Length: 213
Ligand code: ADP
Ligand code: 5GP
Image (tube, rainbow, N blue to C red):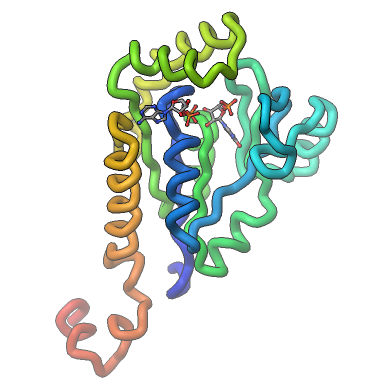
């Protein structure tokens, strides 16, 4: 059983261009209690991306060393590059009561699910495949080849939505953000999460008797 104030682990996945990063950024700006894990990757930084902020940009050799030292909570090859969630911080932040978001791909999410069954798994969908393509093009981050890889992979990735607890269509950004906020708020009210909270755990409490006796 988890402790009273333990944070919620939230895993967010979805095809490239669906708006995961944009949604996470908005959540971070609005909620002080959220910690977004910074992943490591072997892909090159995009214009404006900062090492240690957007990602830890590692060479393949250093990434491999970290894998061998068991330094990742999960890792995967995504669109031809390696990505991984560093172990340090995630457990510490959860213990400190922070809600931790992992913005990772499906392969990684399935690995996390094995070790954190209490995690909340959210899949972000684009309103349409055409809109998805336009968003990746508009972002201007990909070469023609990388765009096609990501777009092709999107068709496969969307089939995995059933492995997740929630699906959120990112049509209007504000609405998508508020849906994710609602999911997190609802998860925090789940009885199996708050069972050990003071009032519910009080042996004399009426609420305790009603729930457990
Ligand atoms: P992901 O992290 O899923 O790859 P991004 O957050 O980088 O996707 O979003 C891809 C592009 O789509 C960005 O240029 C972003 O500004 C834009 N975008 C995100 N959400 C919306 C939305 N609801 N409506 C229109 N454009 C959006
Ligand atoms: P991008 O290159 O667009 O930043 O990310 C490409 C894909 O890698 C996205 O689907 C993103 O969710 C995923 N990703 C980012 N960090 C991680 C990670 O630490 N682990 C895994 N498995 N996937 C990640």
